[in-house]
Image (cartoon, rainbow, N blue to C red; front, side, top):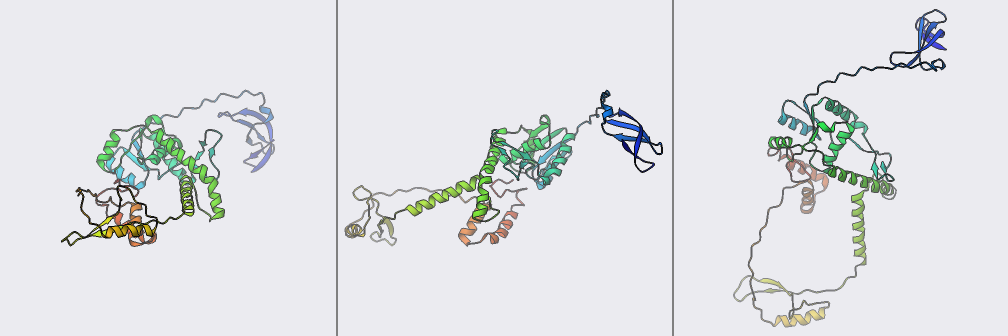
Amino acid sequence: MEAYCVKCREKREIKDPIAEYNKAGAPVTRGTCSVCGTKVYRMGRTDAHEGLPKPEVVRKAKKAQPRKGKLVIVESPAKAKTVGRFLGKGYTVRASVGHVRDLLRSKLSVDVNNDFEPQYRVPNEKREVVKELKKLAGKAEEIYLATDPDREGEAIAWHLMEAADIDEKRTNRVVFHEITKDAVDEAFAHPRTIDMDLVDAQQARRILDRLVGYGISPILWKKVRSRLSAGRVQSVALRLIVEREREIDNFIPEEYWSIEADLLPEGGKVSYRAKLAKINGETPELPTQGMVDDILAEMRSALYTVDSVKEGKRRRNPSAPFITSTLQQDASRKLGSRHARRCPWRSNYMKGWNWMVRGRRVDHLHAY
């Protein structure tokens, strides 16, 4: 048996080897160098350790450090700065920067034989974020999960607890729909637990995306072009388009006519356009021009009277402020603008809100 000799600076045969256990309970072999007599030491279990009683190792318990302060976790760094100013001292605000866990990209990551159990992992780019949050959560007296007030935000809060090993007993969920001091104070005055119904809904959506897209996307790569993705939304939308196209292809055109007349009252200056709706109390069917000509001959010699006048009020509300989708739709419909040209308009439009609200969402009308 050999061990490294610090004096000879190379491995030498151990003279008078003694098998034993060190203070940490690990097997070692002690002896002397067979050349210079220096004490040598070798780690590892050998046959000589068989039958030797292993000592009980009493590990000193680490002294528990008192927790202090409150940790608040939001999604975006910009929101973290604003919320931190509202809360003041005693609060540490950090951002998760979106999701911290997701399904593995290299495989299906859904156990279809085990109640569709998802298999999550922390992406490499989020490991440092999770590590920091875990360290801060271990020192905090209370943890507040202030992710977005939607299904995705609820799921992010749950994933944070799982990935960073956050103690559920010290954790609260807070929700606010606008970044103002009053809204934040109101949310922290009424914390709650995580809504697992919302979490399960998000997981079901994500699992369905993976089950559908994982099988369909490779077909798109072969038939259309690479890097296209398909999922629950694209698949259903494609089916609706295909069904509609089949209806168009199978449509048999039929000839039909409608009759309208411009009527000018006696002594009047403004004419009124009227549409033929009924003949003798029945809705007319006008499939041929010959039938229309017969009716027109009678109508040209007829006298017309106003049977009744119905007056009413119509209320028309102004359109809602633009969000990203409606801005792009109007730009395309009214101006024929392409997406690349619309982007600067969208940015300038959204910048105009900065003086009125502290944050804004571009996917709905909430001033967030």
